[in-house]
Length: 80
Image (cartoon, rainbow, N blue to C red; front, side, top):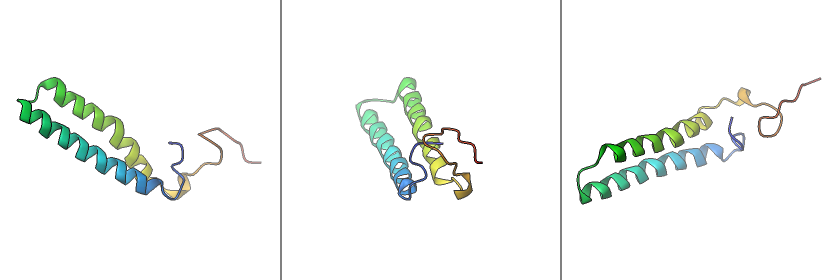
C-alpha cells in the first residue's frame, strides 16, 4: 500500500487529510462561487482533486492488520 501506512498514527493522519481536503475544497468552491458561477472546469478540478486524495487515505483507514507485509516500501521478501 502506501509508505508508513503501518504506523500507529497513520489512521489519524489519514482522517485529518480527508477532513482538510473536504474543508479545503468546500472553502475554495465557496470563494470561487462568490466571484461568479462555478465553471465546469472548476467543478471537474475539485472532483479530480478529491479523487486523488480521498481514496488513498480511505485505504489506509480501512486497512486490516493482517494486510501487513514485511519489507520496506512494498519490496517483496520471501519468508523462509
